[in-house]
Image (cartoon, rainbow, N blue to C red):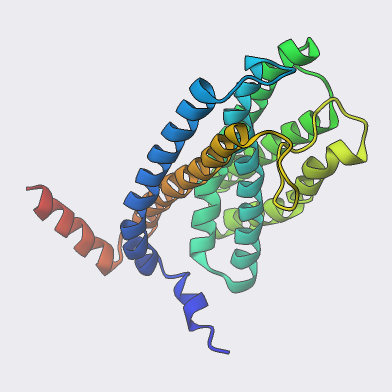
Length: 251
């Protein structure tokens, strides 16, 4: 089997060129999808028969929670690729994605607290789902702190990769916490294998928001990675040529 395509993914130059083409598409898609999902979900979706209008927080909470977990799985995959195949671009992706994942986890916890106050009567409870999400936030902080605390780039990359791989065990705990333990948190709003419990006019805008959040993640991730690639490859000839072309274009 020819693995040339796989090793090509680790080329900073190739990534910079291809991401420059994809970035505008993901950015526009994120803006359109998030705007459409928010307007539909907040203004036109019917209120829940039990929770009333307070349920509308799910249009922010659920996409943020999905993305927070998916992002950490990506960190673990990048960690494996970086340790096994020694691809520097894997570390670039890991370092660029960690702050985004941390923000999404924080948003999920904050919106969950806003929803929990009228529903449970408390901003915070030591529920299995909430506690495992809080642990996820600390794992993100750990990855970010390791990457900044260790001056040697290779050592920092290895340390962050190991933590990302070890910490990924928390993801199935988050996912199945409502099934393994007696928790206050409700089960999944919708899954791929089961019919949604809510009507289409409520779950379709939620699906749009989820897609919008993932497009937003892709766009921001590529922006952060492109900046980091330029910083790391500053002495490379192709970077100098790229900067020269940008300067000439600006002038």
